[in-house]
Each structure stands twice: as C-alpha cells, then as structure tokens.
Length: 335
Length: 296
Image 1 (tube, rainbow over the protein chains, first blue to last red):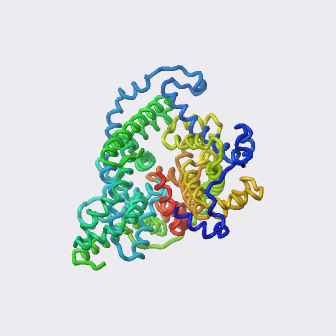
Image 2 (cartoon, rainbow over the protein chains, first blue to last red; image 1 turned 135 degrees about the vertical axis):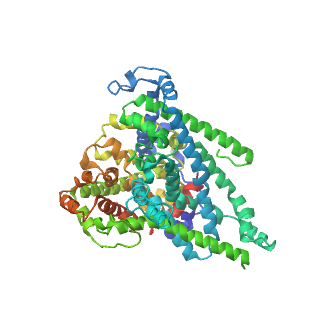
Image 3 (cartoon, each protein chain N blue to C red; image 1 turned 45 degrees about the vertical axis):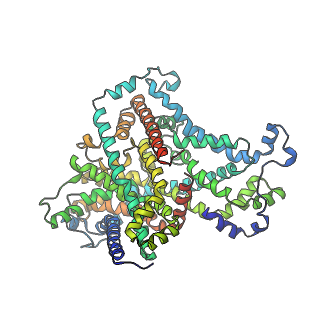
C-alpha cells in the first residue's frame, strides 16, 4: 500500500494505462480451449511458479509427512517406510518420563511470564513514544530500540554473560557500588535468577521491534477522537486510556491470540545459549523444545523427540482455537 | 495543542523513562566495545565501564590474524551474499508468477503455500530430511532449504498486485513473455520492497548459528556465529580458547590479552556488518513490517 504510490510515481508511463483493471494470462481466443492447452500456452508463468512449489513440497511437506516417525521405532537405516509401527508408545513414554513434570512446569511458567511481562512491554513503549513531540528524539530512541533485534542470539547471550559476569560484569559493579552486595554473584549459575534473566533478555531484545506494529496502529487512530477528548478537557494521560488503547485493542487482541497459541514455545535458542555453561540449572531451564532437541539430536532418540513435537503442535492448535473462540465473543478474531 | 501542567509532568516522566531505556539498550554493547579495546590484564582488575583504561588494538590484531576466525567470516559472508541474492531473486520471481491473475491453479498453489505457515514437521523430521538429501556437511545446507520463503513471497505478491496493471498489459501487447515483463518492468519498480526483504534475509543468514550446529561437523564450514558460540561456551576455561590461535598462546600466557578480551573483540567484529547496515535501511524495514502485519 505504501509502496504503490512510489512506484506509480516512478514508472510515470503508467498514468495513461491505469484505467485497464484486469490482467490476464490468457488471450481471448484461448478462453474456450481445453485446460492443458491453456496451461501450455502460459508455460512461462508456470515455469516461474512450479520450481518454487517443488522446493516448498520438499522442505515443508516432507517433514510434515515425517511426523509419522512419532508412531514408529524409527531406524535410521531402514527409513520411514520400513521402520516398525508402535502406535502411541513414545507419547506414553514422554508423559511418564521423570523429566516430564519439570519440563512442562518450566515451559508453562516461562511462557506465562512472557505473556504477562514480555507481551505488554512493547505496547507500553509504543504508547510512550506516541507522547513524544520532538520527532528527532523519537527517531533516535526508536533506532536505538531496534538495535538488539538485529543482533544474533549468540551475540546477545555473549553480552548478557559479560554483563552478569562476576569478573568485571557491569551489573555486579553497579550492585557493589550501591552496597547492595558485598561479593560479586555469578548470576547465571543460580537457578533462582534464571527466569528473570531469560525474560528480561527477551524483552530487551524485542521490545523496540515489536513496538513498530503498535505504533503503526496508533498512527491510524482517527485524530478527531483526540480533538473531541481535548474539548472535553481530557489530559493526555486520560486520552491514552480513553482513546488510544481502545482504538488499538483489535491489534492487541490478534497478537495476544497468536501469543497464546505459542504457549509451548517458551524459548529455544535463548535458553540453549544462556545455559550452555551451566547444566546445574537445567531443573529450571529445561523447556519442551530444548528437551526434545537434546533427546532427539544429541541422544538420537528420533521417534521420542518427534512425538514431543506432535504433542506440542496439537496443544498449540488447541490453545489457538480456544483463544480465538474467546476473542470472537469479544468481537475480534483471527479467522 | 496546549499542554496543561499535568501533561507537562507526564511528558517529563516519559522522556526520562525513554532515555533510561535507550541507555539500557546501548550500554551492554558499549561496555563490550570498551572491553574489546582494553588490555586484557587490566580488564581483569574489574571496574571497567564506560571508557577503556589501557587502550589497545591487540585484541583485534589477534582476531584478524586468526585463520579459523577469518575462515568462519568468509563462510558467513559467502552464505549471506549467495543466500540473499538467490533467495530474494527467486522468491520475487515466484511471487510474481503467483500474482498473475490468469495463472492456472493459482488458488490451489496459494493454499499449498499458506498451509506451511501454520503447520510444519518440526526439528527432527527436518533433520532427517536434510540427512536423507545428503546435505549434511555441505555448504548448500545454508542456501537451498531457505531459497523460497513463503512469508516473503506473500509480501512481494501483495506489492506486485498493487502495481498498475497497465504496465504489464502494454508489454503483453508488444508480445513480451512473463520473464521479460518481470525483468524489464516489475523488478525496476520494486526497489523498496527488494531492499526490505534483502535486509531481513541477509540478517537472518548472518545471524544463523543453529543450522551449523546440527548439520555441519567439518570445522572449515562453520559460520562465524557458530564459532563464536563455541568460544563463548568454553569461555570459562581460557586454555581451551587459546587453541584458536598459535599467536594468541604467547599473549595469553603474558595475560596482555585474555579469553574475555578476545571474545569481545570477535563479537564486535561479528556485529559490524549489522551495525553498518540497519540504521540506513530503517525507513524501508519499518514499512516492510507494516505491509507484512497488515496482511496477517
């Protein structure tokens, strides 16, 4: 939408021809021809599309088919065709595994923390940025806030490890200079700090980028609403609650539904990287994805790990459906 | 709009909070930059925050002399350049085909694509597929699976469908086929959307560390992010790090450089390409995100 105007301006010559509305790959004389003839006649468009579709078939659909591994005792040398079928054996094994309870607890707890802290944070940032009157200041703050989004998780984990390090870690320096602690603490080695570190790192990395969508929604709010509120004597603070938030509520709801559908995606790269030095905190850091990765790729229990993946997908679809049903009652929905 | 006293106080609080946030965003990066320019031994004394105490370029000299790191940079650059060019070009062409109204099967093709946004096989079946295709320990594992991005296709397609169709029609009348329309008419007017999607594709190539950890065991094919991850992992034991460079051995024993100062220098070098590119493409990607989210 935004691009359209630019491109029309650039192309120039488009002006006189804009009245024609439909483009078609088939000339009129071929309209009645059999399908295969029309298909051959448009070989050039089909040639643009079919290789892409084949790549999608290979890299997206074959893995979906591969989910059947979950119901087999997969043998690398026999492949999917010849491996024996075992029904729900691996699901049963997962649910009765001694690790199951703490993995599920961590997954849900971390997800809920992300939902209650990570989700509102960018909305709050967008609302604050909306109050800024100096455009230059706003731009600079926004540019800075995007920065961590473009850094890889490897870099971010390196920064976090450095910040929290007992040797010259800035957090320890700060706390010591405020006399809050006497000796530096190796924060990443203690289970009680891990969730806090994980959630804050996530907010730090994505808050600026996630705010873009909400800022866009705020710019679309009808300015008359603000004028009317202003005439009624509402302060900016009140307007935020009476005009801005209700106006962007549909956007918030959509992202909230998607977030609830992701309830079992508690994290993967971030957790792997922040715990890579410490197995001692696995009791609080192990979530469903890191667990499946360890079992599947590292311990070669492919079927077991795939069963975990299937379980996760089923729960996600279920949660998404429930969240969407609730949202529909409230007037917004995904489909 | 005139501001009341209450509004002014609110403004003050907001500016203050935003400044704090900006500081928190930048500081970890700045501090690591400071450590990378400081003599390693001096850093170990602690208390290094805003400014280097004993400035040195030694850490960077070691990094740039390290063959393993330079090889890894080369792999990262190669996969970013090749992967981005191929993916953006082929996805754009795919998307253009999908935008042509008379395309036979278009509706079914589209459903075929969109399904993959909601369902996937997950890590293990994907891993087994890559194994089966013989892409393990091949450079092409970085490139081929990501060539077609359905998400980018949808953004491109939305853009192409918004173009005035007159351009296409006139070319059609001149007897041009769809390939020449794509190259001569569509690509030249698609600058902004190509810039946006190239940025996102390039960043995800540059930042990817995980695919190498599961698909690559040959150390000369590892990208810089994966090598950096291995360095960070062994950071506690500096002896392990010293294996990365013969020249570093001597320095390490003298403690002028440390594992930490070297790691920080490597991290900074790894982020340079991103820091140089993203602020300038900002106006494009902000638009790109919006087009994407409007279509969600």
